[in-house]
Image (spheres, rainbow, N blue to C red):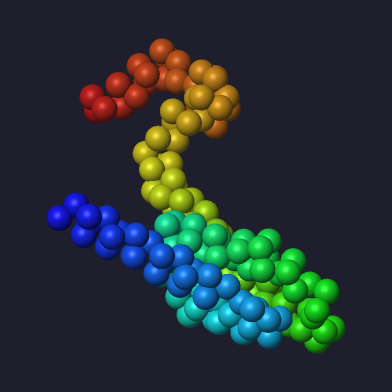
Length: 150
Protein backbone atom coordinates (compact mmCIF):
# COMPACT_ATOMS: atom_id res chain seq x y z
CA UNK A 1 0.00 0.00 0.00
CA UNK A 2 2.80 2.43 0.91
CA UNK A 3 4.53 1.81 -2.43
CA UNK A 4 1.34 2.64 -4.33
CA UNK A 5 0.95 5.90 -2.42
CA UNK A 6 4.64 6.75 -2.91
CA UNK A 7 4.36 5.99 -6.59
CA UNK A 8 1.24 8.18 -6.92
CA UNK A 9 2.94 11.03 -5.08
CA UNK A 10 5.98 10.82 -7.36
CA UNK A 11 3.74 10.70 -10.43
CA UNK A 12 1.78 13.73 -9.23
CA UNK A 13 5.00 15.67 -8.52
CA UNK A 14 6.38 14.83 -11.95
CA UNK A 15 3.13 15.89 -13.59
CA UNK A 16 3.14 19.14 -11.62
CA UNK A 17 6.74 19.86 -12.56
CA UNK A 18 6.08 19.22 -16.25
CA UNK A 19 2.98 21.41 -16.06
CA UNK A 20 4.99 24.22 -14.49
CA UNK A 21 7.70 23.91 -17.10
CA UNK A 22 5.13 23.86 -19.88
CA UNK A 23 3.67 27.11 -18.55
CA UNK A 24 6.99 28.92 -19.04
CA UNK A 25 7.07 30.80 -22.34
CA UNK A 26 9.34 29.27 -24.97
CA UNK A 27 9.53 32.23 -27.35
CA UNK A 28 9.36 36.03 -27.16
CA UNK A 29 5.87 35.95 -28.73
CA UNK A 30 4.72 33.37 -26.17
CA UNK A 31 6.12 35.57 -23.39
CA UNK A 32 4.13 38.58 -24.59
CA UNK A 33 0.98 36.50 -25.13
CA UNK A 34 1.18 35.01 -21.61
CA UNK A 35 2.09 38.33 -19.99
CA UNK A 36 -0.81 40.02 -21.77
CA UNK A 37 -3.19 37.27 -20.63
CA UNK A 38 -1.94 37.69 -17.05
CA UNK A 39 -2.50 41.47 -17.10
CA UNK A 40 -5.97 40.99 -18.62
CA UNK A 41 -6.85 38.60 -15.79
CA UNK A 42 -5.66 41.15 -13.21
CA UNK A 43 -7.66 43.86 -14.97
CA UNK A 44 -10.79 41.73 -14.93
CA UNK A 45 -10.52 40.61 -11.28
CA UNK A 46 -8.40 43.13 -9.35
CA UNK A 47 -11.36 44.78 -7.64
CA UNK A 48 -12.19 41.54 -5.84
CA UNK A 49 -8.57 40.68 -4.98
CA UNK A 50 -7.76 40.04 -1.35
CA UNK A 51 -4.27 40.20 0.13
CA UNK A 52 -3.56 36.56 -0.77
CA UNK A 53 -4.66 37.15 -4.38
CA UNK A 54 -2.24 40.07 -4.68
CA UNK A 55 0.57 37.95 -3.26
CA UNK A 56 -0.03 35.34 -5.95
CA UNK A 57 -0.26 38.03 -8.64
CA UNK A 58 3.02 39.54 -7.44
CA UNK A 59 4.72 36.14 -7.67
CA UNK A 60 3.49 35.71 -11.25
CA UNK A 61 4.51 39.26 -12.14
CA UNK A 62 8.00 38.68 -10.74
CA UNK A 63 8.27 35.46 -12.76
CA UNK A 64 7.50 37.40 -15.92
CA UNK A 65 9.78 40.33 -15.18
CA UNK A 66 12.73 38.68 -13.41
CA UNK A 67 12.73 35.12 -14.77
CA UNK A 68 11.24 35.04 -18.27
CA UNK A 69 11.97 38.55 -19.56
CA UNK A 70 15.77 38.28 -19.20
CA UNK A 71 15.73 35.11 -21.35
CA UNK A 72 14.24 36.99 -24.30
CA UNK A 73 15.24 40.63 -23.75
CA UNK A 74 17.72 40.68 -26.65
CA UNK A 75 15.18 39.07 -29.01
CA UNK A 76 12.32 41.56 -28.61
CA UNK A 77 11.57 44.04 -31.36
CA UNK A 78 11.02 47.69 -30.51
CA UNK A 79 7.25 47.24 -30.81
CA UNK A 80 7.36 44.23 -28.50
CA UNK A 81 9.36 46.18 -25.91
CA UNK A 82 6.78 48.98 -26.08
CA UNK A 83 4.01 46.43 -25.55
CA UNK A 84 5.85 44.94 -22.55
CA UNK A 85 6.37 48.40 -21.02
CA UNK A 86 2.67 49.16 -21.57
CA UNK A 87 1.64 45.91 -19.88
CA UNK A 88 3.98 46.54 -16.93
CA UNK A 89 2.54 50.02 -16.50
CA UNK A 90 -0.99 48.68 -16.65
CA UNK A 91 -0.28 46.01 -14.02
CA UNK A 92 1.43 48.51 -11.71
CA UNK A 93 -1.55 50.84 -12.18
CA UNK A 94 -4.00 48.17 -11.00
CA UNK A 95 -1.74 47.33 -8.06
CA UNK A 96 -1.47 51.00 -7.09
CA UNK A 97 -5.21 51.50 -7.43
CA UNK A 98 -5.77 48.56 -5.10
CA UNK A 99 -3.28 49.90 -2.54
CA UNK A 100 -4.99 53.32 -2.57
CA UNK A 101 -8.33 51.59 -2.02
CA UNK A 102 -6.88 49.73 0.97
CA UNK A 103 -5.52 52.99 2.39
CA UNK A 104 -8.87 54.72 1.84
CA UNK A 105 -10.74 51.88 3.53
CA UNK A 106 -8.34 51.95 6.48
CA UNK A 107 -8.72 55.72 6.76
CA UNK A 108 -12.52 55.39 6.80
CA UNK A 109 -12.22 52.80 9.56
CA UNK A 110 -9.88 55.05 11.52
CA UNK A 111 -12.17 58.05 11.11
CA UNK A 112 -15.11 56.03 12.39
CA UNK A 113 -13.29 55.63 15.69
CA UNK A 114 -11.48 58.97 15.66
CA UNK A 115 -14.46 60.99 16.85
CA UNK A 116 -14.92 58.64 19.79
CA UNK A 117 -11.27 58.74 20.73
CA UNK A 118 -10.29 62.23 19.58
CA UNK A 119 -9.78 63.60 23.09
CA UNK A 120 -7.33 60.82 23.95
CA UNK A 121 -5.64 61.20 20.57
CA UNK A 122 -5.19 64.95 21.00
CA UNK A 123 -3.93 64.49 24.55
CA UNK A 124 -1.37 61.96 23.33
CA UNK A 125 -0.35 64.28 20.52
CA UNK A 126 -0.24 67.58 22.44
CA UNK A 127 -0.09 66.53 26.07
CA UNK A 128 -2.48 67.36 28.88
CA UNK A 129 -2.73 70.96 27.73
CA UNK A 130 -4.69 70.19 24.58
CA UNK A 131 -4.76 73.46 22.58
CA UNK A 132 -8.11 72.57 21.02
CA UNK A 133 -9.77 71.97 24.36
CA UNK A 134 -10.94 74.88 26.47
CA UNK A 135 -9.58 74.91 29.97
CA UNK A 136 -12.29 74.34 32.53
CA UNK A 137 -11.52 76.17 35.71
CA UNK A 138 -13.14 75.60 39.07
CA UNK A 139 -14.91 78.93 38.59
CA UNK A 140 -16.36 77.75 35.23
CA UNK A 141 -17.51 74.50 36.79
CA UNK A 142 -19.27 76.44 39.58
CA UNK A 143 -21.01 78.75 37.07
CA UNK A 144 -22.19 75.74 35.06
CA UNK A 145 -23.48 74.08 38.23
CA UNK A 146 -25.40 77.24 39.25
CA UNK A 147 -26.88 77.43 35.73
CA UNK A 148 -28.16 73.88 36.09
CA UNK A 149 -29.84 74.70 39.40
CA UNK A 150 -31.96 77.43 37.84
